[in-house]
Length: 192
Image (cartoon, rainbow, N blue to C red; front, side, top):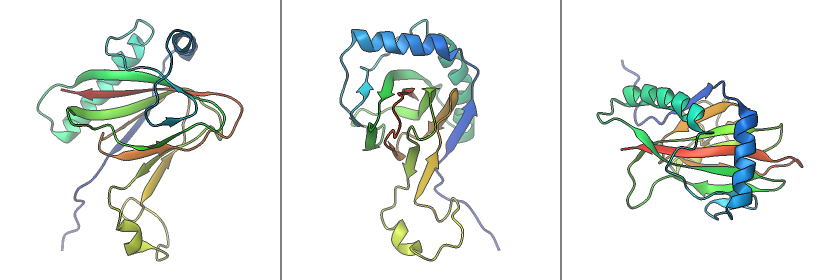
């Protein structure tokens, strides 16, 4: 008898040790310089995409490069992965992000992620949703305890200095910020 995991998605989290004060100030200054984009965000502010690493983000990407190498190895991915783009997010009270993926027609992303700069309780969890719309029908009202086999959503509570890495094809969204303080994060994509 054999029990195998097949078609598995991953969620990789790690607390980094980054000076968040300098990064937070840089993001707030960037907000003054650039008008926001509207992609998946409802309310709040999302910066333009950046491809060149700013000196204030260099320590983060040095640390993230090492974590992305771990995922590359776990995926048995042949090519080296590099940072493709990153952007800043500031979600004020009642702001949230609608369900989305980090893939497109010219997609070469392999790892997507978010790094939390400023968080508070009730500032909005990131939620990952299973890519199978029929999954809930199979298990509805029959689950004694949820786990990675029978869950259709998976929530992560944001924390300062937390890095969350995941597959770009994994649908995700951000719950509304329920407090009067801004949640600040940086999102990014690595690929070839």
